[in-house]
Amino acid sequence: MAEPLNDFGPIDELKPEAIGVPGNRRFRLLLRQGRRTACFWMEKQQLGALADAVSELLTQVEGGQGLTEPSASGSFPEPYEIEVQTGRLALGYNEASGLFLLLLYDIDAESEAQENASEDEEAEVTAANMRPTLRCEATRAQLEKFYSDSAQVIQAGRPPKPSKNGHFHAN
Image (cartoon, rainbow, N blue to C red; front, side):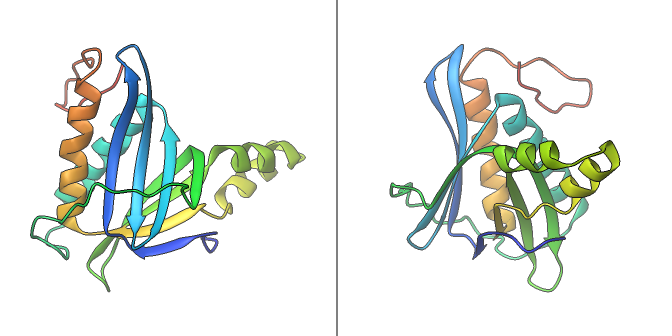
């Protein structure tokens, strides 16, 4: 994996938000590490898929650092150091630190790199080697809170479509 453009390391807080009225909302993920802040705009479906992936990862990985409730200031000072539309997202677990990894990619940078690729195979290789816009680490408690908050944010709008496996999928 390519080195990230920005590495926040262990973050202090992450928060999903919806801006606007139901049926006409925009979604974003806010991250804070000290005074550094980032805003990743995303589709409702992306937020739901990220929450589902977080839930699955938490189920697969026992333990992890930070089993206590995270402290949240709710303050994400603007202007954000990073503010982009989200493309790909990736999750993982760092056994050495006991923290969960989150990689976020800028959709515009991905699109530009793929447009510049000459063939389909080259486009796939380019996408696989893209540098994440942001890399950060979160505790288990932070991700559990993110999952809970995401469910509330998504369900505050139009009702989500039911699924067979119990996960929520955004409309």
